[in-house]
Length: 151
Image 1: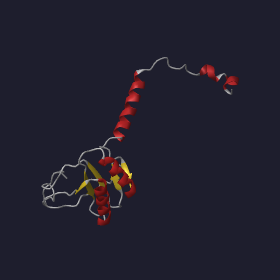
Image 2: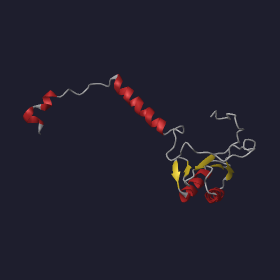
Image 3: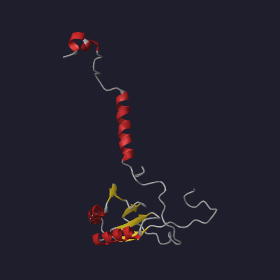
Image 4: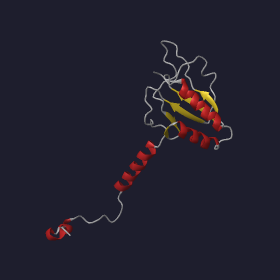
């Protein structure tokens, strides 16, 4: 080995005999990091912060609880479950998810600029899988008021 002529192996520090507290702190931080990146509270890739639902008077009155949701951004990207899906993948995902609950219902959160053809394709795929569908909308905010979001 190349270390033998210079006797470098003798100058190395010995291996630690036990785990010290710093090892457990590092492991804890790594677990926390992976937990946060798998969390629903971390912004998904491709979902911009400028995502805005269309506004409709009476949106809160017509609100319903749903078992699943998909989010569609202006670029036509569909986010369902754990990530980005195209329409054929969405159909498979919807069929799998429909078997997990007794009465599946799907909320479609389509941003303001999404073409209606994409929304109708998603509705058709959801109905084929056995879902009832609901389109998400935001209640309009009166001018000068801060609304529910506090912006």
